[in-house]
Structure formats: structure tokens, C-alpha cells
Amino acid sequence: MKSSLRIVVSVLLLVTAVWLWWYFHPSPETAIRRQLTRLGVAASFEGRESILARGLAAQKFGGFFAPQVHLLLEPRDLLNEAVTRQDLTELMVRLRSLPGVHAFKVRFYDPVITLAADREHASVEVTVNAESTGERHLFVQELKLGMANIEGEWLITSVATVRVLNRAPVQFFLATR
Amino acid sequence: MTLVRAVGVVALAWVVFKFVLLPIRVEGPSMAPTYRSGSINFINRLAYWRSPPHRGDVVGVRYSGHSIMLLKRVVGLPGETVEFVNGQLLINSQPLSEPYLKYESHWTARPQHYQLGQDEYFVVGDNRSMPYELHEKGAARRERIVGRVLL
Image 1: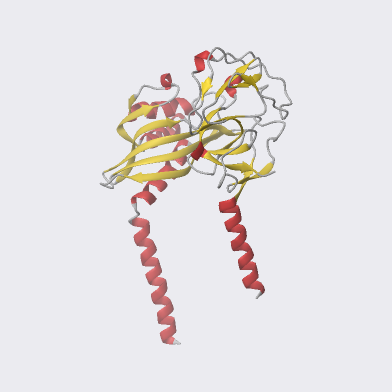
Image 2: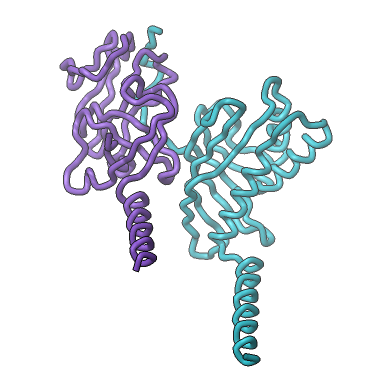
């Protein structure tokens, strides 16, 4: 009885040790997935916030990006192509201050991670879904993120929108209603 | 024995609904009235295993994965030209009969037409009474078409 108890305890200890090792030493893919989940939480908010809370949350959001981020977004005039972390932080403050937006939830789905040979850089194709009060799919967009392991943390270095459907040049189309 | 059967049924259901028939919930008005927002359906991933998509098929078009998809109808096939004139869809400059359309449309996309590549299918929703700019449509590469809607 005593020896079987020892075996059970040993196995439990081994499983716990393996889990702890996995948790604190994740593979790059796991670390990137966790980072995207955290980013979604940081970009989301619910209810009215104080100015201080809004500033802190935006600061946290900015922390997911490298000091310089290259953006390639459609439409092109939405943001400049090269922005700083500070620009993104300010953008998040503005978003959280929009009148009428009392809740905003961001989630990242289906990340497809391709690691570079050095395993310190990665390209991530991911679908972002933003929902606001009453709108489950306010914004759905596939993104291609460039990420780099900077001082132990996977930070976003570039963001590009991916077209799921190619469209003809918009200027030639005329909607009549 | 019952437990084994139950496990087998669960495993089979998991394989079927994960890899063959993807359950979907339709959201948004772009496929109305054929598919209404909130309705449940399935995408048959084996539909195009041995044959390419056909004109008129309603298909799922994926983003980076299968969690969120566009539900659209294939109207243009590889190599064809697509244009809208006063609500009429023209394929290679010839009007296409679309009995599934129930709402009036006034879309016009002249003088330019869309020329599909050799790996592209033009997909659009059935609700063309929506404003043109708000309706997601365009050319989907073959590898983005997940399968055909089942029901």
C-alpha cells in the first residue's frame, strides 16, 4: 500500500513538474498565442472608465508593440505606415474615449504561426474580431503580424491587413442605393 | 460495452463535425433571404474534394482559420469577367439568370469589370438590396473556399 502511494505521489509530482516547466518555459508558438490572448484582453473594455484607468489600459496595450511598428492597413489613410508605440497608445486612449462606445471586446482567432530560422522572429496570420454592444461582428479582419522576441517578450513589429476577397478598384464602382 | 459504444459515438461525432461537416451560425444580412441571420447550418468540407466549386454554390470562405467564415454564393468562375449593371450580374458580358435573388438591386459597376484569375472565384451574397459598399464580395482564391453549405 505504501509503495503504491509512493508511485502515485511520484507520478503526480512528475506531472506537476512537467506542467510547471511547460508553463514557465513555453515554446515560441505557445508564447505567441498567449501574447495574442493577452493583447485581446488589453484592447477590450467594458463600462465607463476613469481617465486614469483609460490611460493605464492604453499604456498596457502599447506594451504589446515594439517601439517602432510598421503598419500596412487598408484604407491606407487610416494610419501612417510607420508609427511608434506612443502613437498606438494614444490611438487606444482615443478609441476608449469615443462617445457611445461603452463596451468593446477584441478576440484573436486561428493564429497561424510561422517561425523564422532564428526562432526569434515570427510571422502570424490571425483573424481579429471586435464586438461592441449589440454587434457581435463589428469588425472582422485577417491580419498578418510580424513579431519579434525582444528581451524575452514577443512584441508586434508590423501589422498588415490581408484581403480575404480581392475587389475591383473601388473608384470605378457606383452604388445607386 | 455501452461505454465503449458511447466513446465511439462521441469520437465519430468529433471527427465528423471537426473535419467533415463544420457547424456554422449565419450572422448578418448579406445572404438574406436564402439564409437568415441566426440560422444554423453546416459546411461540407468534402464537397470540393474531387471537383471544383460550381456556379450557384453557396460556400464558406475562410479567414486565417475556420472559426469565422464568410458565407457567399459563387457566381464567377476562373478566367471569367464579372460586372454589375443596374442590378443585373453579367458574366463575360452576358446576363446571368439568378432565380435565388428575391430583392431588387440597383448595383452598377461600369465601365470596369472584374477579371478573375485562373485560381479565383467571384463570390457575392444574395441580398443585393444592401448598399454596394457595405456588401462584402469579390474574388476568393480556391484555397480559401472551405466547402459547400449543406442545407
